[in-house]
Image (cartoon, rainbow, N blue to C red; front, top):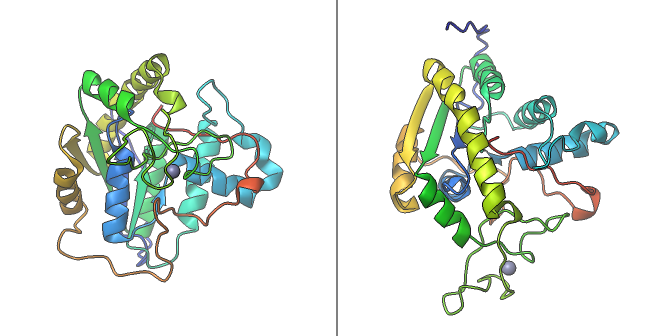
Length: 272
Ligand SMILES: [Zn+2]
């Protein structure tokens, strides 16, 4: 199969590296992305954050960002727009953008490839993977905090830090932690199956378009970070601080969103 992609060259000094961090559910994408964001001060764009930013920027088009399936995902067309919208909003001179859980399919990959081609930038895919049993065991153990992660639908996703003395409680606020709703066994199995189905053609195409770096998700984050930094060409050259450093705990490529303005539905497209 041959894929032909237009490559208009328009050298600019913004965004030299776009790094997609993908992998099946519970492979450690969020944790790795967080670490990389802290070390490089790069903005993070996730499907959630991109959709939220696009909805806020275009309130008249809210209906286009309604979920289209039982997992709460929006349409590929809407997600594609949201991603382009958020990438276009990155300040000139941004040297690295981290894409958590993106691209999710071949069309998103082609979009990103076109984007980096126009910017004279580079696309790197960091692919985390591990056995299904390992992933299921990790998903069963991960916890979120309803208090610290302000989510308008009470459906937090970010891994919470646990208290040393009482791992059932949040290290930040002391409240009891809960499991993610989409980590329920049946839902997780569904998500993992979908991920595998969509990822196979994506990785085949990615191998012809740009750098694909497969990382063994069995490794601890401390071992994965240097490998990822090396792949991004950032291991010995810390990124300069930007004017608006990311806010802990989850740096984002968009401004903070007031909970009251985000509406009822909180789409959460991830690796399909
Ligand atoms: Zn908390």
